[in-house]
Length: 108
Image (tube, rainbow, N blue to C red; front, top):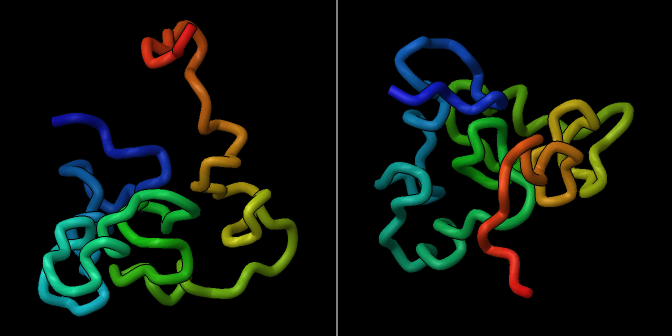
């Protein structure tokens, strides 16, 4: 099994518990597998995300929803949706390539 993402709640060594619990806003399907009328927006991965990256920031539906959905107090990440030390959007400092990683999608 692959290691859970660094941002995962780390509650289990079996994988990201939060991502397994996350549901789409209608509650019928797992997050990112929505098939209702909101599917287009529910399955979109762009923008700031909750810590397991399954739901938009501020719209967490897993057991961490109480802490994940709180308003930011103190320093915020560049998008302003999460704390500075837990940014999950495209503006995150760590969102680029890892050292030694090659981006094969680069267009000349």
